[in-house]
Length: 303
Image (cartoon, rainbow, N blue to C red):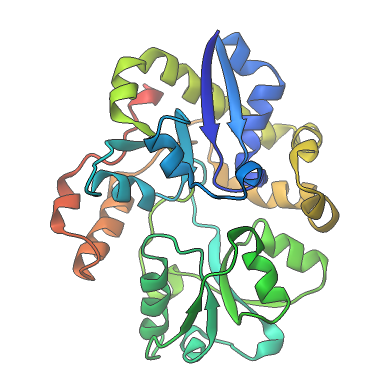
């Protein structure tokens, strides 16, 4: 058996379901892979998935596409490469409570935004406000990562970034009405998120094993499409107590399933979508144009 470690970007949730399905059904084992899944709750998110990849604590990391850019362009370069897109569509948005009367992104001016301190996040949210006709003048705070969503619910923050297929499902179940602002609505192109990252050197060295990992992961996500009840029962034991109490898991999975893609495109990243995001970062002077010529993702493991 080949031991491999995957660092999650968050506590187990619907975006991770394919990995848990493939693991629990023994699909990885059938390919000679013993996969260990690293939960950020175990270290209270003291280290990002990207850092775990950099330090060889993990063979794979789940992160936004931005992490691939960051690792490749830091002083001590890490040749990281994205190898799998979990979602084919962006299910994230900036959310506010409907009771706050913040009915458009421009009304976030002067409001408190709870940030995850992700690369470009603060710039993206400011640009969203500007594109909607505002000044982009927000009060940005950085709460404990695993508690950010609750800062919105408790009124400590006016807005934060959420996944509509997770926090959005929780809000709906609690009859909490949200206003949601997507990047697409305000003409901001966004890359894939979340994606699976690895190191380019390891990919070259262990290509056959990594290809089996990707092939099996894809089977896990596609399994959920036709086996909703079983997929729900597989993921459920891995959830935090909070999520078990507050998330309608079957509803979340049903909401998400169409966005995993199909047999043809599940996991695949499109060059034009990636390039549009990279070009936007360059145009906004958030990155040097060198990123336009870097190989930051590959679909080669699907061949």
